[in-house]
Image (cartoon, rainbow, N blue to C red; front, side):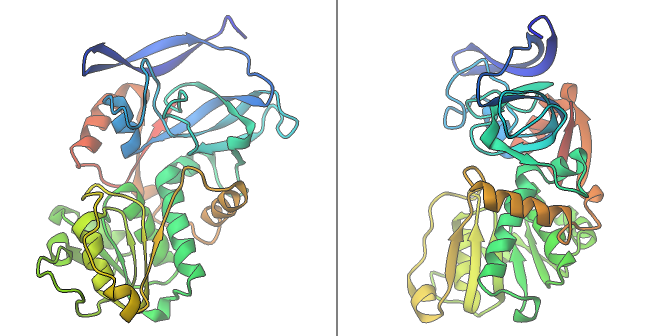
Length: 331
């Protein structure tokens, strides 16, 4: 095994603040006790991967490094009693692709507790059509359901709707019968969002209130926010009584400028979504839902596929905010 070489995308710091991406070949090594070696078949591209690939020390502390917070593949070697060679598995979250070499490689070595068994009815490729983005959307939908949000309650807003989390959320909510109001700054994506199942498409400027009012006219029963900042503050003020909003991103800003009035006068709830350290029981339950009743018929339309060699260009695209839907990486 040690003599075998595998291909990986590696990020190196060539000078202070200057990072380069190259395809390299590394030697396969045996996993330690409690670890598994996974032959990666597919990965996917996320914004966090782009940050790691561009030298963001808040994501990845040391270089050289291989990004890729998602991986789906087959166990090649197991040093855990819970897994056997040939098992098909999904790995998302934890430290994969951050400070542990990630899924943009033909092999990864990870702790066995990071693995989720590939659910019946879901292919390895389909699991990466979801990836962390789809998994995060699933966590958000589960939170809405657990807080009593049903299709008959009213419209659900999805902000950042053309992104990975947003587009997956639109498609899955539509599959479940919700009236989805997709919020996007990209006018050219109107038809794409309608094809994902959105009933209405709202320009982002409509949910960036600058009036300073503590409460706005109720518009949404619930919301899945992926951007944060003033958009999230506006959505909170625009919820019906008892409304629920989940939050999982901050591309529009990490600060939240609002008042307590929506929470104490309208019973609004704000729920944070974390996909990195999700407990295994919930993690497996979400993947079961994604493999079955939550799988949207538009899943394939959400995605396009690239190889390792196309990753540098795709990373630039996502950093420039021009990515639409999901990008599967064929390993």
